Image (tube, rainbow, N blue to C red):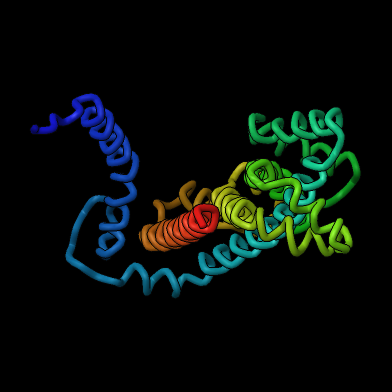
Length: 271
């Protein structure tokens, strides 16, 4: 008997692939034109790695890249620590406190970024604080910590809550049980939150523009400052390609890790 293809599934998959194609087409075009040295956008003058050479030769842009990576990494580490501790503490807290914290955590996610930036700027000015690296760090942590919480929370829900209590019954201290039992179970969520924090920080412009000191430039503020008087430097195409490939590689790595772990857990349960 010949099995007929499911028309609904074919249409659904075709629609999904079409949307993905339209989403990633501009990025693919950007990647292609990062391998030509043409200054004009959309003009192909032959294959060349000149833009990548110009990228590493541009001192001001390289400094902006260094600042961006620094603030992204530091804020991601702080946000991951705070978000993980908040998620674990809320998970084991009483129900009324849990609802209050979860409601407060949703606000930075749904709130407009400009509102957070302006409120923090007004707060620092009212406290007579100058804009420094630390004010910028606080702004990025406020932006990203909620996303870490939301990545860690599902892993805590999926975890068997009795294993923590079993570790305590077997003589483990609360701290030992936390680090040896709970954290390994929620590690994929922590790693996902860390990567998301870095991505959000790398991409941020509004909070950075309001809370940075004048001499501190990131990629977004540097490009915004340049395009006011000049066109976008062509080497930025090479930079965008590198950033996209790094993020793509990280996403693929964590997906493969999660799939392997899920397969391993499923195999162990079958046995």
